[in-house]
Image (cartoon, rainbow, N blue to C red):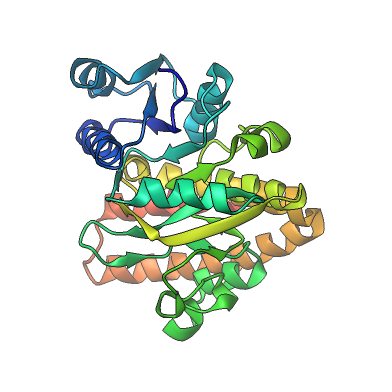
Length: 310
């Protein structure tokens, strides 16, 4: 395709039908909005026939198969190396998303109208239509504490917990520290200057690290609630929850060490250890009350122990 208006890159793992719906939404919206889109899919060693489905039903998609799982950052980087996002703005999408009408146009307009916008995230909604937090402040000690020790819902939904409150949003773009990585429009110039994702983040926090690097390089990060994307959250990572919980904290520790220093990361570890002890007591209580099987309890406790050893 000569001179696409945008490119779309999707890194997928074992979510064939969600990927199908995602691709259908991209091509439908691009067609309705008169946009030329070049679409890439990297299949991270799926076992559900995802890559075959794409090749069979979406002939225009550039499919790349991997024999091993590169993780999200590794998969995205592989597409960047191939040339995705080299010239046209690149929309990086999770396979468990669906683009709503107008979203592609809004995001492209943002990139054109905001000369220092390196990354623009859309507004996200869940599959039932309810609003999902899609923009955040950079994480820190307070957010870590509130994750394990929720004081009350008001604090959970406040800036102290890294939130931009949903009820205070206005129907126009706003600056944020970082969007949720389920969907991000990326400016080619930002990609060339800041570089690819840090593939040391196998899963989680890679978009936070990317945005931190973009801000430090002088680029801005925006969120545009007018551009709506449905996010069926956690469909890939939910296939291995205990393992992904360990991966989450491995990535968070890496993020804090990289951007806030080893002393700060050490303080986070102290909060996490206290939180893990509280979580063990909560799980034991659920087991005693018959709300958790012995096998589920053991699996969850093993995950907590693995986090404690990180």
